Length: 273
Image (cartoon, rainbow, N blue to C red; front, top):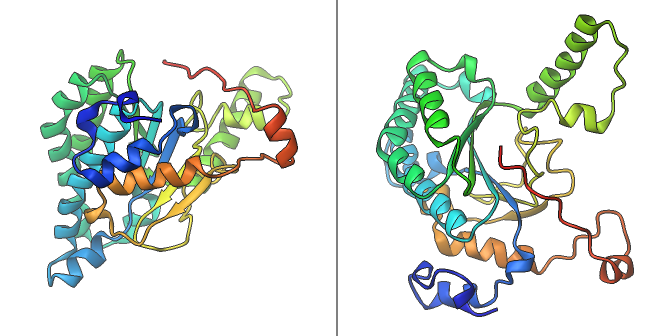
């Protein structure tokens, strides 16, 4: 497909333009999830404290969100802070919470102006009150937007999410007195991502080949792209490279190649909230 399928200003150099040429709009993922890894190593290689890597990673977030929005993807989910990250030094946790508030303060108007809908998944009640207030304000302000759904995973752990979904089923059964059947559909409807399409593509930066307790249920059939690039160095060209890689994959979902070729799977409509 030719570049005019997209905003011609999206490509900032010849390499990015060549990648855009290779992208077929019909083969773009609807939902991309990203494990943003490598901030600490980026800082350590430069003789800096870990928080410097987190600060540098904000530029990668900005670039990735902008690219996903301009390519008109349906959803983007970034893994920003896991439930396990609460074990880190208190000074680093405080710095990360301050960075989240600063990001929202500086980026919310731009995000809203681009029609992006901001959302948070995870145990939000565990976050400090000032952070929760800003997150809720951002979600409320962008709730009516119809562009990219931008999920930020904060205090998120997939095992906790599955436990919360199962507990919701138990609580509902106890409240109604009805016997609820546990099905994939019933559980999915109670996940933090209820109503969203599952990720088609999972990107992990820094070369690590782990899932790290991220969207374990939702990525059951996702394609995985691992790049050695550390998150603070991740830019538009890396995101485009991942999309080109994804477009070349054959997604069989348990079927044979012949079945997929004969009858491509229908794409379900994306709920806009």
